[in-house]
Image 1 (cartoon, rainbow, N blue to C red):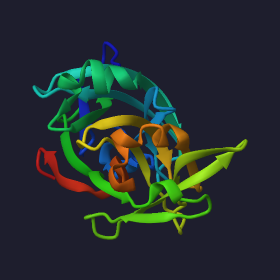
Image 2: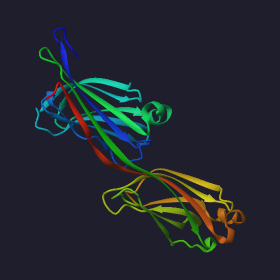
Image 3: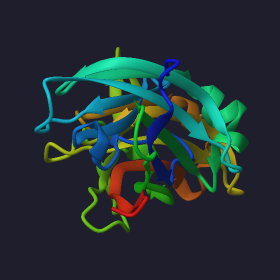
Image 4: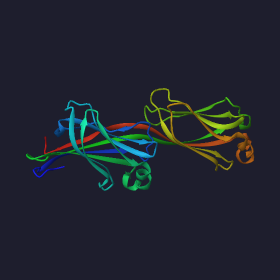
Length: 296
């Protein structure tokens, strides 16, 4: 990144902390606050993170639509930070960015969130650092620092459903439930218990309803049938569901539950324990401080 005549480099460091990020259960791409780099002709930039089919974590550096030149050459470095501030999975690159242009990099989701979560996640916070450089041969080196934070909305909710007179529960009937969020302005998760007929066989099922607006939720869940002692007898996991459309989740044959009614259906009551991990996306995002040195 230097030549034999280069003596100094201006360095801009952008540190972006994403809180409540124990898993990537978010309906949207996570976008960083926009930052401006003065010594790169006041161009504006943004970082983003998303997952691809839950297998890969992809992260981007993107030039925003600004008043700078049509194309600018940038030396940059991207890395995740450990609790001790060490760089993890560091990449360095030199690229020309047009307005709106971006570069994408990837990591295995399990590598970050499972195998090495103690390094990557501190108090459920994932931290990404971007450093940008401009090499010069005169003047004083400028060291600029910007710290930004994004907080994700993520809630874990558990509730018990009691379905009375289960043996006479007929297809076409819905027992609805709405899971309200404690986050102001967040959408509720709306669902219903029902019985559906597939190829002549009755199944116990859950229906998740589409969100009424362009916004939507993303969630994981565990649905369990409890026995008369309160222990889980049957369990079904749902992963990476969204409320972009109505979804019907077929669970177990009704006859399976009826055949175990002495264990499951005390007084013809069916008890269901539902546990959901619901992601609402970013609920707050902003730049917390910006430091220029030497003082501007």
